Length: 365
Image (tube, rainbow, N blue to C red):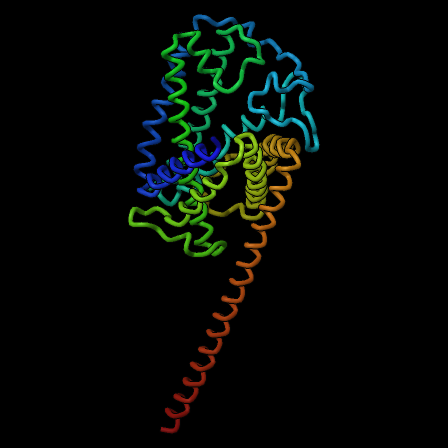
């Protein structure tokens, strides 16, 4: 029942939003606990499955897909048609869902910057946290997948949603398959809390700089931005009726736009503000910074080119609304600054006149 599904998703989202509102310490402690629970079945799978690996399995290329019968291999009914590269299947790989899933699972490291205000020593803590996070996330994806591929003789068309749990049951036992499903579910809670916290703090930062209404900068007694969290939960509830594959692609496309802006801002500041104080600076000169960023820029642009026309239309509408809001707030800020400047000049003129009259009276006396 789609209505029952929507009601359940809404109730869970509102409940998790309330937990997020209670404060970052609770979210942090919950995330650490979820991390250990979520990784435990994959650690067991790695330790047991490493003795059953056939390395030749890693070199096997996927079978070519029959685009005329995608329902046979695509349990999510993922639409590979449409867009600038319709049916982007090369070398036996469906590149649109492949890259979108990888990108969705490995992005948002930049969201760590949203928590700088709540870190005691960001210049020391944040770079180390980012380095360890990138390394651990990459390893935690790569090693279990290599073990799973090497320890099984399944065909690539069998790798659909939930197959990793089935494989864990085959390699270790049914109990690990159940544990894997539970770990995946609880890991989504951790991802939800981390993403909601980061988005709420980003919105608060925009409110502090006048890009959105000031109401979104108000903090609760727990120190959390109340109205920013409410808006985030409301958007999540509204999007709960959409399909996951559509949401992933739409979010990835808009996130790619923000990444390109971040890349451009990084390079511009390195060239125009080289002496600006930075908590952490990439130890490369300007030329090598450009070379260093080029693969990420090209991959981001390539991902955007794979988008469907529906995603492109969604991105155009959302960004037009965003630029319109930015323009209106900028014009309003300009008028406010103009009024303040005029008032200051008037006060200055009145003050100057009073001083002149006082000086004249003093001279007469």
